[in-house]
Length: 268
Image 1 (cartoon, rainbow, N blue to C red):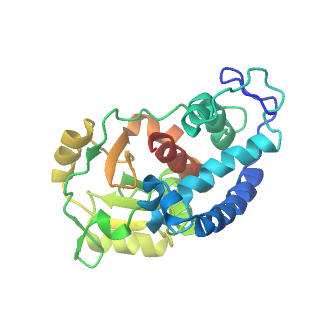
Image 2: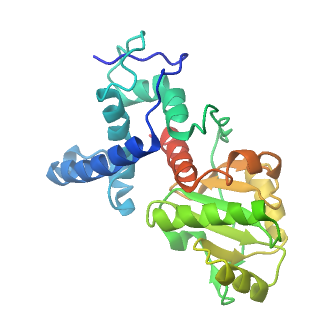
């Protein structure tokens, strides 16, 4: 039986390719298992998330079990005696975090989650046609909202390209919204088209700063990132001071896995 030690990192972490293969395999298997399960046996929390398509929550749980079963952590000494998902999640959260998000030999710092999730306020956003835009239009899925402005800087463009690629790779599983408060709608559209950016680009106004500051307790600035759960509630806000190193500078898969992991860890 595989064993875990939450205080010691495994000698060899699974590669992102191994994680991706396991994720796809178990998303398919989880969907099949759900289809065969009598309705009364499906947990209500999973039924409520059925709009996600293949069960992301169940898939991630199965992913964790698969990584264990394949022996990635089989050399670690302290066994888990609890059989519940909650116990497994608690004991392995830091190992999963380092396995999914390790960049070279460095594990990014954890995202500080807001203890009590708050509903995101009406941000009064508009799409690039000038029509009102609501985050609810994207459906129930983990969401990243980041704030950006047009800059002639390679690092700034790289952050936007990474966010765009994450949105392109995971349609229906991850929503990526780029809110620009500082440029005109014409300029935003031109920049997005010129650089072939695929995230949901919208325009906001300065009132968003106050509204999010009240809702999330930290006001956004260029490069800030807000994380929402599947119910559209604010779970965390990254100020721009750490975002360059820790969030949108990540490769697209790392960005996506980070969002999924923290949504999954905080939902039960």
